[in-house]
Image (cartoon, rainbow, N blue to C red; front, top):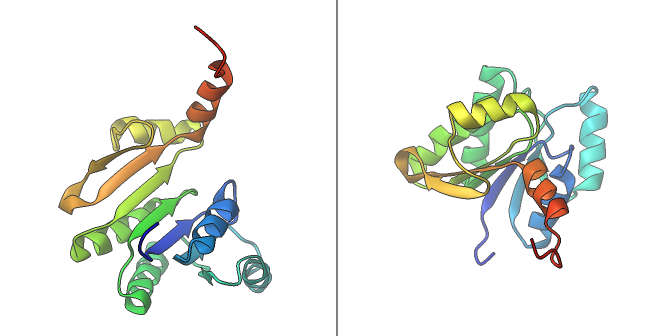
Length: 164
């Protein structure tokens, strides 16, 4: 990564979220980590701050439109922009508000990880993009859809020494 960017990672506490946050922090990027679920706000904040001391942890209800809109607005006010959104969780509302902020800025990239059956419907109906393929969306924003299950499954079936 050549230039410091502002990354928002939704689903920072689940699945590949922690490794993603660590990877970005180790490369000197500005990271806003949003865990998509938590039970006790104070406990979650302490836990994530201990785990990612260099990340900016935001605990917001990503399923509540006013909270999500406010969080995106505050992130843009604090950092001046959002360059990248990695959406590992179910942050559809977050994606919409971040997309709007990126369109106003004239650039950005949304990376959506799909991980269950209902997400496949979203991929085919609303985001017809193949595995890790980026396409210019509305306003020149790049949008990528990655389904790790398919990627890793294909790696299992096609070993490097397999001549088929």
